[in-house]
Image: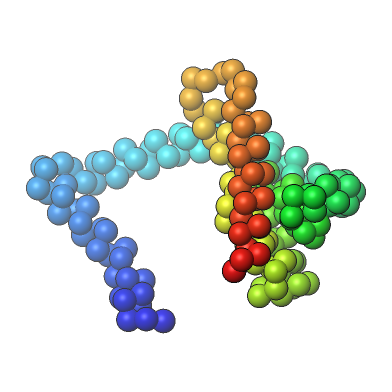
Length: 175
């Protein structure tokens, strides 16, 4: 580990904490009251969002445990190979928009099977890093916003995620 990274990892949180306290003192704000208010709003947010998160987590777990994931991945594998993505990444590409933890488990399995320095391992890292848990983010955002008509939000996010996956994997061929 380089000295700069070691310094940053050891002192970044205390530096941020002291900076916030100094800025609150300069601006004559009550840092403790702001912290308590923020904590209260975070608890309220979690209480409002929890049912949506629970529904997504249950759906993903049912999808994986039922075995449907295997069959869908087997069907999607040849199709994604047409755009340059190895079929071994089909399950990761399908689960990533649904679950961060589930996709991390699949990523670890890919590493164990193919190795982290293989093309499949590098491509899996690129897929994981270039995509987002679309349904999780949508559940949190839309549960707290006044937007009730999702219309094209999720399909466009899924399309953007898939295009990002295609670009990321094909860029891995040059690395």
